[in-house]
Image 1 (cartoon, protein in one colour):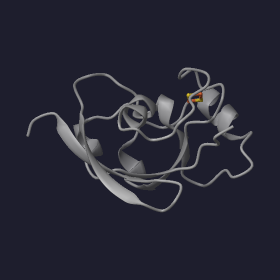
Image 2 (cartoon, helix red, strand yellow; image 1 turned 90 degrees about the vertical axis):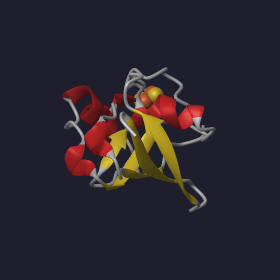
Image 3 (cartoon, helix red, strand yellow; image 1 turned 135 degrees about the horizontal axis):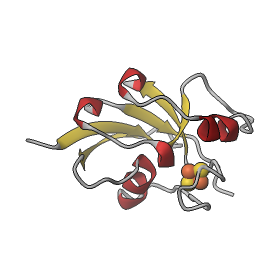
Length: 109
Ligand code: FES
């Protein structure tokens, strides 16, 4: 269908689920995860200031816009930083992000 993509999410307990995401609503990946009932604190409300929306991109990173400096600075503070770590609040999904696979890593405190 137009403007609907399917992405895969791995939760903290290792459960993997596919969710369908509309790409024409201008939500961040953090907002999509929360709307899909994943536990993401997002304490800063999406300002790239808390890193509780930390995800590791397992597949499809090449189709995401590169992280900007403020996102990279915040990621640098994480003790469990991975090569493909991103802040979900800084990611907007487009049609070419179909098949994106992310693992939720954000802290719950
Ligand atoms: S919601 Fe705080 S850094 Fe993403």
